[in-house]
Image (cartoon, rainbow, N blue to C red):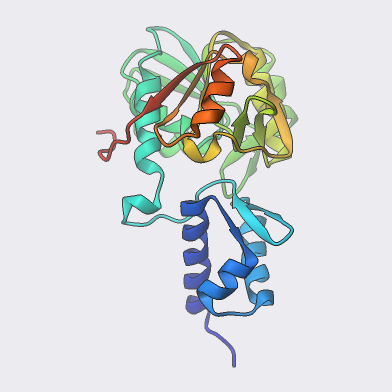
Length: 261
């Protein structure tokens, strides 16, 4: 019997919400939770991997980026991301040039900056984001990759080679003292690395607790290259201590519910 598209999509969205909440799941767990076959679950996971939301491993999958919204804030990291972005915005000085990458957390900084500055980003979502009139936005250009609306490729790297920034706010898929700043998407690695190398002032990693201690395949830089890690109170305490020993200032924030006005 053929299942209608709405039913399939509802199950896939529910699976994605569960992965977002837990960070990592097994195929066996999903088979039991959703009462469907192993093959069906593998197809559902493939659907999300194709969209860059998860990375699969033998017997399961782990989160790369959040793709499904839910009215219950406990299903979402938005309240942590906004706390991180709001705090980070305080480090921007009048007249600064700021790098922001494709991170869903870092791009939120735009909503909180209230000073005259120039933001250079390869995140096309910046086009539609609310921001103060004092903030000028320059897009790097490049090949547009969905669903993250990330700009990648040689055009981005060529344009970044011609500028420097006073400060950068970068997100990541994972950060650890041992393996550094990592991502699951190879095409974004070179851009992140270029932003780090072309920043003459303070360098920040903005990452909610799900990213702290996580490791992915491609390295953009190492923790001793950054000045600050801004995260939230749920971050793994042992990993935070290891990162601090590398000389990185760390900030652990309480979540906030309200969004930028």
